[in-house]
Amino acid sequence: MDLIDMQTLPYGEYKWLMVYQDHFTKFIQLRPLRAKMAIEVASAIMDVFSILGEPYLLQSDNGREFRNQILLSFKSMWPDVSFVHGRARHPQSQGSVERANADIKKKLEIWMIENKSTKWSVGINFVQLKKKHSHHTGIKCTPHKAVFGFETPLGFSSTSYPS
Image (cartoon, rainbow, N blue to C red; front, top):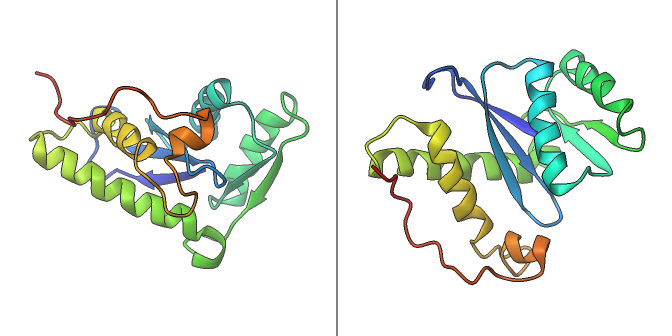
């Protein structure tokens, strides 16, 4: 789990982007956040856990105080989840996350240009769809197939924002 600072391009109340990536399947979940506060992140993580299930290990490179607040929130609900504190922007411990973040930012920027929109909190849905249906060389399939065991029968052909 990582946070991308979008404060230079806020959209409405959203100023942060939470990236949740399963390291085994490369499946990502993106959530816009209003603030970089433990309660806000905990709520977004709860949303992801309710869809994908809780992991055995949750890694974050955010500050220890921040992580500890989240840890306290979740330890009572999921006592078996371990939390690991990675080193911020340290390629050896966070390389996969940092590469995913860079790719997400690039795809989001392209979506905003193509759609002439600053609504990145909407664009993340298209980015998330595109990434989950893109072949990943590391896992030799798409993240969607790695998680669900099959490809979706419908192709994703457009990233245009419906007017």
